[in-house]
Length: 161
Image (tube, rainbow, N blue to C red):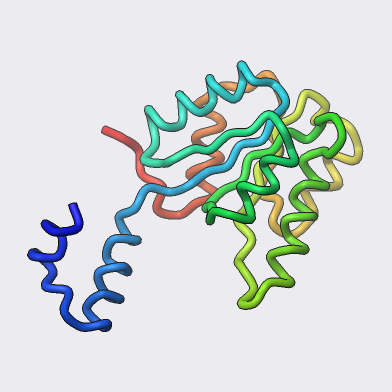
């Protein structure tokens, strides 16, 4: 693919290479990270999102591995379970935010959607007021609701026709 792309764009100067990267990024699929301890739910949500939206989805049932993924890759949207063993979704989001703020150059924190079977708890409702938290979806939820929320959080996320 690189050779075809190179011929079409004539990448001889750093400026043309930079412009090619910008052009490619504009049409690139959006990246989503989902962390939930329910492995079956992870599979279903990943399949639904990738079959209906132009996106790439990474999943992890383990918050610690989700943390590592968030540091290694760049995401447009984070979807975390509110209530997980060891580290809940809000704490995970906070930890990632602290690292993003302290790296040079600082990274932009993607929006967070929380999913939870305990959405009516006062703590879950309080989190909606936190910067970067863009919604709370109560389990069980419809995939259409999740996709609508994802599109609202990430401008330019396209549906697959």
